[in-house]
Each structure stands twice: as C-alpha cells, then as structure tokens.
Image: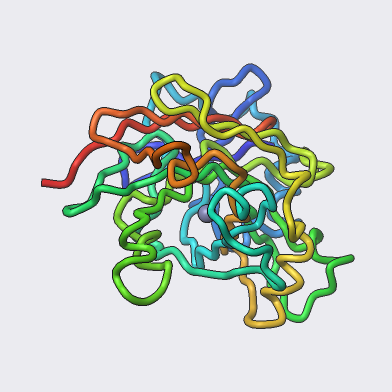
Length: 282
Ligand code: ZN
C-alpha cells in the first residue's frame, strides 16, 4: 500500500493511492497515518479495504509528510562509503546519529526556505524508514519486522550551521522546511529488499546524486538494532538512513549550494518522487 496525507499544512487528512494512481480519502476510516495505524494489525485493516469504496479525492491537493505525529526524526550520517569519501571523512565505526527537529518536517513538494544568513544549504536524498512497532534491544535479524514502511526524505542541510556554528550537526539539519518527507509511505510488504533501491537527485534538471541503498555502510536492520540499544523506537518514529554521493559540498572544483529559485527533484525506485522549489526567508 501507498499511504499519504493530503490537504493544508497542519490539517492533512489520511489517504491512500489506488491502483490507478488516484488519491482515496481514508478520513472516514482512520484519523491519521500515525501511531497504531502503523502496526501490522492497523495496516492489515487498511489492506482489507476496497479502495473503490473510498471517496476519490478531487483535484491535485498538496501532500503533507506521509506520516503524522512523528515522535523522533533520527538521521544517520556518512552511511555511504562513497559519500564519506567525497566529504573527506573516515568510515565510521558505528552509525553516526543526529536528530532533526520535528519542526523541520514538511510535505514532499513544499518550498524549502533558505534561512537567514545561509550561504551553504545543500541537498541529500535519503531512504526514510518508518517504525511501526515499539522496539528496544532488537536484534538485526528481527529488526525489519518493526518497520511499517519506507519513504523518500530530503535531508536538507546548511553546511555552515552544521559544522561552523559550534556544536552539533542538528543545528544545520533542523531549519524550518529542511525535512521534506513523502510523497507516500510504501508499506514494507512492497519493499522486499530495502538494500536494493536506486535513488537520484536533480538540481535544476541536472543529475547531482545517483546512488543505491546497496552501498550503505550500515544496513537498515543494523541501524535499527543499534538505535534500539540506545532508546526505544516508537510507531511513527522516522529514521533517515544517510545519503549517497553527489551532495553540493562534495562538488569539484568548487562546492555548489542552493539559491532561491532553484528546483530539487529527487526520488527512490518504488517510493515515489519529490519536487521542491527553493525560497529565501525574509
Ligand atoms: Zn543526511
């Protein structure tokens, strides 16, 4: 299933994509794509519905982030060996974890706003993992059983805020609009191998990132195992699992960063595509 949220920001309704690619309204069935809805039982209930019986959504509404009520937005840094190389970093011994403030989360096609003082805002296409079942101290062999599904994330990053403002990466990862998430949550039954997904990102029509989740240093299962040793993962938590090469910071001979008016287009095979225009905070 492809689950989504549509409507005005802050007032999104739950929906699903039918076999024809039309949006169907789930608001008569559930309140949100969140919490218990993400459990195996909750998803089985939705799977039993006939999409033809659900109201078809007219027009072309805005999409919100594909998960509501996200408790934690965990991000893994330098998780592709070739991306670590382009940034001049060593291969990490354990997954690098940082948090993105939930207030950064926006819909997949919302405008990304450069914050005041930004001159080094960058893009990062990433596989997002949505937790469906509470887990703590889970072994990698069982880790994927705790996943509701997968989605596309753009881990937008201000490199000066990230590294030059004293302190932790969170500063450069948490600016408002720096977390486009969606377009849909693709349930895990439709993603048999999360380590075999092609991904891309274009800026102004030019291919910047080309990658595959096959080259992750730590797999999704290993990341969930590791994080669940540190804290409990809850339904609706999202883990963004790192980016492949081709970020602006790594461009030669000069780094390239986003400017107002640029357009980012990105996606992952089977998980859909995002498109963001870049704006500038006043
Ligand atoms: Zn990232």
